[in-house]
Length: 177
Length: 237
Image 1 (tube, helix red, strand yellow):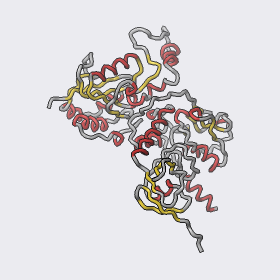
Image 2 (cartoon, helix red, strand yellow; image 1 turned 90 degrees about the vertical axis):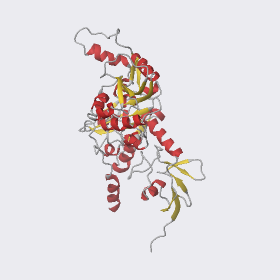
Image 3 (cartoon, one colour; image 1 turned 120 degrees about the vertical axis):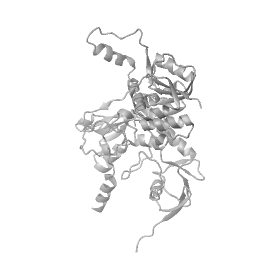
Image 4 (cartoon, helix red, strand yellow; image 1 turned 30 degrees about the horizontal axis):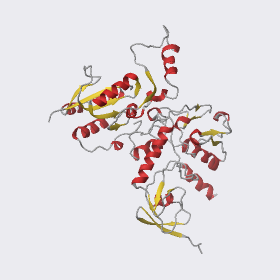
């Protein structure tokens, strides 16, 4: 059997889900026999590949760039997994939603700046007014809540997804786990 | 001679059970280890049927009844876990999660929250509804406790425990529908209200809406089990 192509993506999240993914430790070697990681913050590939079997997406959709990425990922992935509470529910990045992006930008770039207070407007992508979970933009196949989902959750879920075995997610994890 | 007891015989999930007249379906179900999920119900407080999680089906009726307030009747055939009920329960929980800002990961009640654990036991992995993201305030004016409207599900346990058990009736509900808020006194800050500082409302709150200021992170288990004992001791006097 040829190896499945696995991608991991980092949108508006803290990278904690990726850290927890790496916490699988030696079990990563077992996984590496089943999948090739073709795209990831820990792999030096610039562009999202045309054909990915399983995409794990960390983070909420918070900017125009995130939105563009998630649509591209969906178009080129057979199975899309929302990894962690930010991707599943918005979580901490969505805490700005009741106020909108302006007060947050002011706080970060004007009020607390010691030199050259100014809100960046070039190179960095524009923030969306409301931070949303990824399923509000594209179809998500598997939801893996948790902040972050534990390494055990990752291993059990990934092994099941790779082998097409049944997977009882609420038995493994929950919001805030 | 003991007074005659009016006994009703009924079935719950095809199990034949007998009950005293006036008992609720929920009481009888729990006596027979049949689990019906609840959120606004708490042993020791009156029931208001606010959360609708305990809805059950009665054979021959189109109406779904809240098991916490519906009383048993002779020959009743009750179902507690049909596909239709499970669908409704999931939707109710999703509505609660979408209505206010429940950010489990940073909530003081994370790991000790009844909404969170019900979400898990009812099989929620995500919320299909759009989040409302309302702007709600936090009242930290009280010396010992904090009220965070972001986490409140309007179960009114705090209102009931304060009025019925503590006898102070500091808590009440203001506004209507989606604008409803729990308030202290006539919407005065909690710290300036007539609060007796007993803390019962904090212990019965199912989420992180009411919490003790001495608790940080997600280290806030709550102990509402004192209520039935307190009632029992009072009745014994």
